[in-house]
Length: 401
Image (cartoon, rainbow, N blue to C red):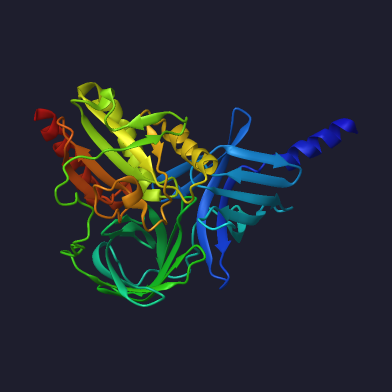
């Protein structure tokens, strides 16, 4: 009898392997959906969150009785769940914010669902290609974007590209004439719906976590481009160099004027642990640094976090460092990302920092040579390849100087 009881406890404590369709339910009853697969590796449950080609490995999973606690590997994001008799999981998604209280939304992981959206009709349009997009903010005003989609049958993937970054890997379907796309990475929780034909997208709605929905529309345009915002970060008149000293996540003070950075090409990564595009850039920079450190390149990350709570910031940034095995210093800015004076308090030589990430290239003479706002990640296809080419060319030219 004891043996049977032990087996029962183990089975309850172990999350069932297989596919799930998760739905984060907003207050307006709209569900932001994504897929996840659980496997057992060396007796330990591992969860892989799927966003098109991306597989986010989540290995901090704790089970107690019928309760399951899942901590995302980056961002202040976690799930508190209970396993049901049909092996589905119900509970809440918790996301850290700049406010005193966290965001909490109901979530259900339905077991045995590998598809993201149900398909009941053949697609009436193929939206593969490039689109000029306009989002209309809930509070008024428009913002531009470019979309790139790939469609095979009902299945669609792609991303939206804005002047400051991209919406990462999106996955979905065209069911009849309705487009459904979504993604979830622990920070982004996005759902896009719209009516489509071969040349136009209309009646679109964009849902982001608990934010008010935005309307969107698009027209197919192979030559779609993003506007020049003309508000990118740059050096103030009369300034040529940066000068700063901040503590890293381990409490050590690091200055851009330290001996290790002299006569080197130095890349300053303006980022935050809350920023999904910063996650993609960190993954890129990790490999780049390994390749170029011996050639005379150094990198310093300067993180603007949700609050100035140093302990909280260290915990969040340590997730980034551990997951991406970052070998360059990660410093904590003494101003939060929402502080309107964040630039003046930390890098007064610059005009306001408007995009995260922002990348600053410093030459061997210590002078700022180039500032690049935003980042286009691997979900953007050609945009990502162009970014990498320009990045390598910039550093290569600086090394020759």
